[in-house]
Length: 206
Image 1 (cartoon, rainbow, N blue to C red):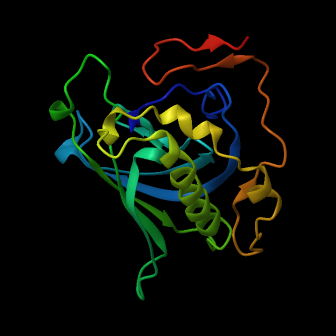
Image 2: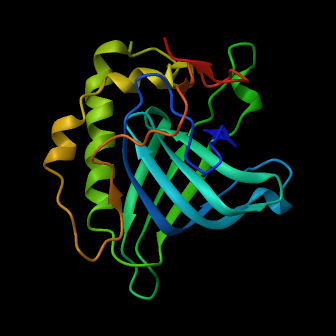
């Protein structure tokens, strides 16, 4: 994960090189723990989820203290589960590992628990696309990963190589799910592209 990733003025995440956005979903509630500088380390906020071939990004409607967005690389998400409780709204829960800078020790960073709650409309479009995409990313990237490799030292951006075009073309669209699929990539009036998770300023694509 990465706290407060770079965003454009309209709230759209600044993309990485070769990043392809798949969908965005408004009106979700997001819960996450172990956030520095927050009461008890837990944050609960309403906002929008963006899903790409590299990551999920939650962008809050209103900042909660110093928290306004949360970036979850798909290669670092695990134990994800779709929950359908009887008395509460459908949700996805899971864990995500931190993106550890090369010069930092892994022990300084904690695994986060998260939950995405679908409080406004169905989730028949979002959930299958998310589960299919994260499975494809894992299968495709197994060929680049050594069994003994520390997962926290993987390059999250290698997920960009996963082919997702066909998946998007054949996605089922649930009319009760307000999720919006990107039929073409959003193009803000800029060519800025990020090249690494820890660069402080986005670099122009070449």
